[in-house]
Amino acid sequence: MDKLYDIIIVGQGIAGMTAAIYARRAGADVLILEKGAVGGQAALTYEIGNYPGFKSISGIELVTTIQQQVLSLGVEIRYAKVLEIQDGYIKTVKTKNTTYHCKAVILCLGATPRQMGLNKEESLSGRGISYCAVCDGAFYRNKVVAVVGRGNVAADDASYLSHIAKKVYVINRRDEMKAQEILLDRVYDGVKQGKIEILNNCEPKEILGQDKVEGLVVQNTKTNEMKNIELDGIFVAAGRFADTEWLNGLVKIDDRGYIIVDDHKRTNVEGIYAAGDCTNTVLRQLVTASADGAIAATSAYEYAKTVVIE
Ligand SMILES: Cc1cc2nc3c(=O)[nH]c(=O)nc-3n(C[C@H](O)[C@H](O)[C@H](O)COP(=O)(O)OP(=O)(O)OC[C@H]3O[C@@H](n4cnc5c(N)ncnc54)[C@H](O)[C@@H]3O)c2cc1C
Image 1 (cartoon, rainbow, N blue to C red):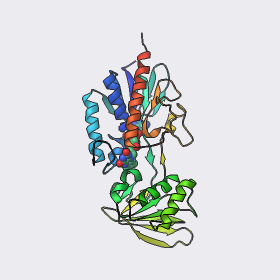
Image 2 (cartoon, protein in one colour):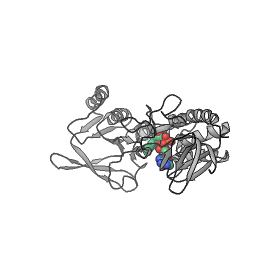
Image 3 (cartoon, rainbow, N blue to C red):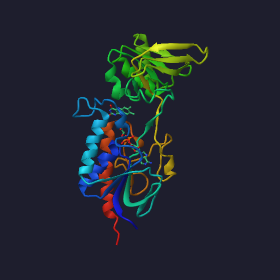
Image 4 (cartoon, helix red, strand yellow):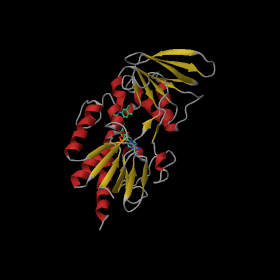
């Protein structure tokens, strides 16, 4: 067998990097495997205004600073997609070209916001397109925004943004929104106050603007009528998904694909932990992902110490 790591962390987002810092400082031999670039979702965030200690910091600056801390501790980072994990007293973690071995695994796979699927959506992400109202809402004070979606997140985002923005359009594909009553009541309050306008049976068709969002073309799904709405921002609330299918039943996931963990970030499989947005948590934010990573690392390290190879 090649090198035996104490802990392999899958994912170099904020959860994975915090886990690496905690595990390495405890004395563990740690490897991070990352399929993309440093920082996960945070790296895509134009400006972060709710991370303690920084009034405003760009996502990429935050994650590269954290990565420097990770590297300075002697954590090994390799760039490859993890394709398979096999459980056992010693765990096997496979990428396309390499098989790694470790005592404990921490899954920090993150979550991916569902997109609208429109042209320019990616290039204008962070320039008027946001997937997180709590994170980016403050940048739209007294501006006009749209929330695209119809469920709990859309309702919550719309009422949240109505206290910040001048006006909030809700772009809903169907006849009516489908959210919890308490959330809908807040939306209808906003409608009564003239702060929210719900456009039912409307589908986003085209984003207007080159360097930043200037509007959205929507189509009425019943009449096919097109309408241009002038906007400063579009909040996509079409849900997120955790890409956990490839785990192939290795650990228990909930009905939305999130990995089920307990307070110690243990999955149902001994020696396999999970942290951050990929878990069945109640809040998917930088600080919570980071805190999860710290807990998972502490648990994984304690477990790894019990795995003794003669
Ligand atoms: C546009 C946007 C703006 C946001 N703004 C804010 C904000 O202002 N404030 C805030 O608190 N939160 C914000 N959030 C939420 C915040 O970014 C996330 O909650 C946080 O980054 C989650 O961290 P994570 O480490 O759990 O997951 P991620 O950041 O998603 O990282 C997961 C990593 O795992 C890697 N990975 C996944 N599968 C594999 C695999 N099989 N093999 C190898 N690597 C893999 C991914 O490539 C990724 O790098 C924002 C989110 C978005 C999308």
